Every structure is written in C-alpha cells, then in structure tokens.
Amino acid sequence: MALIDVQNITKAGAALTYTAAAAGGDTFQNGGNIIVHVINAHASTARTLTITTVSTPLSTAESEDLIVANIAITLPSYAASSQLGSIFRVPESHTGSGGIVTMTYDDESDVTIAIARIPNK
Image 1: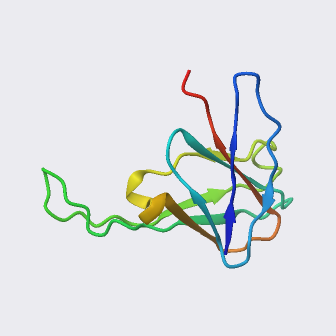
Image 2: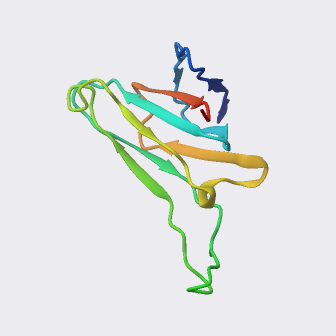
Image 3: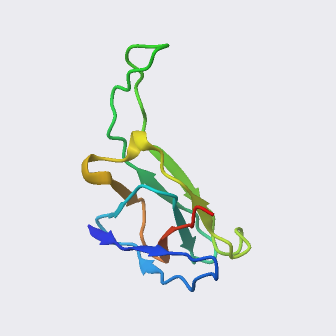
C-alpha cells in the first residue's frame, strides 16, 4: 500500500503527475478541497476502485446508527471513458484517523491516480 502525495492546483493550473495503482491498494491525506482523478487505461475492461469506510456505524440526529458502506466506483475502460477517467471527492465518513483515505482495486493493472487540492478562490 502506497501513500500518494497530494498535488496543489493553482489558479494558473497544474500538470498533474499520475501514480500507478499499487497491488495492495493506496492511501492519501484527505481534507481541504481534495479531488481524486483515476484513469483506467485498459482498452476494454472496466476496473473497480473501493474506498473503505471508517465510520461504522454513523450516528445522526435522524437515526442513531446508520451503517456506512464502502464506496465502489466503476472505472470505465479507456475507450468507454473518452479518455477522461473518473473524478471524485471522498466524504468524511470514509476518511480515517489522521485524515487518511484507503483505496483498493479489483485489478490495479492499467490504473493510474492523481490526488489534487483545488484552490478555494
């Protein structure tokens, strides 16, 4: 499992560096306008990225104990995604102690990831 560095995007833009997905999964430091951009470069096979929950159960005013499931994201094949990939944010319910998010893959082959902080204004 590898810790992926968060890259800063400025108002002028950024050329993100992508990291190959690790066989045992990856982690990153969440918080403060973080986005995840994942590209599945396989020509025809979709992949699944799973974000592990850390808040089970989640207590709310409406319900004392809500079970929070892992988040599974289907990463379309390169051809099916028009080469854009998948862009998403991770909720607090899936951010562990110290702000760490854990992601695993059904198959890390051909998957690359960039973690970026977007500016507030």
